[in-house]
Amino acid sequence: MDTLVRPDACRYSTFMEQRNGSPLQVTLTAAFKAGIPVLLGYTSIGFAFGLVLVGSGLPWWLSPLMALVVYAGAAQFMGVGLLAAGVGVPEIAILTLLMNARHAVYGLSVLDRYRGTGLRKLYLVFGLTDETYGLVTTIAPPPGVAPGHFYFALTMMNQFWWLSGCTAGALFGRALPLDISGLDFAMTALFVVLLVEQTKVIRRPEPYLFAAMAGIGTYLVFGSGNFIIVATALTAGLLLLFRARLERAA
Image: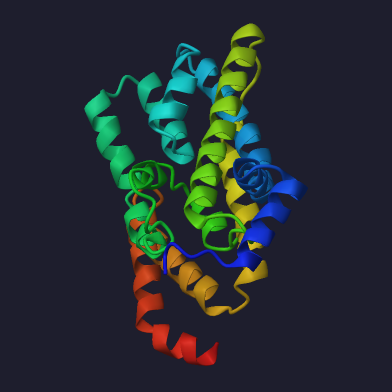
């Protein structure tokens, strides 16, 4: 059965290639269109990060290096402050691991989507940022595009936008020093934009109410420095607890 190809599938594939180009071009075009919000956000926030890094007295090349190796916006902003304060690399690595531990919570929900991607799954796991997760879980690959190829291209493009912004900001800040006060708020602004996009797809109030209650409660108990991981785990636990009821209501 695997060796048989339906004639209509062949005609559709030929039509797609004639209309939009090769399968690679179709995949890249679809990923580019899906990631436009992240493009705008990552280049802007990455630019701000580059300015913050150079303004903190660190070498400019550290900005693109962190974009390639760390690739975590909030953790990178935190890392700049810690490096500038003279904190050691092991301590920064531990704090970064704790800050990004939330990925282990929501990353489980994309395992089925990444099934069959082979070695590319290693990069897909590495590149699963909050923004990429938001796109992967709300945007389906267009007809004629293999899901694995689409998610890989989307993830790769998102990191490229981040790398471009971080590099440009560092070079600009090196050439023309500026007052960088308040630029680190750009990451918060991007999260707000992604939340608005999520509300267009998930219209039930329960997930947002659970997240708000968990966030406020854990913030009051654990403070601003340690509440993110606990709040994320608590939100996931509430959603699992009420999963059956939410599914029946849907």
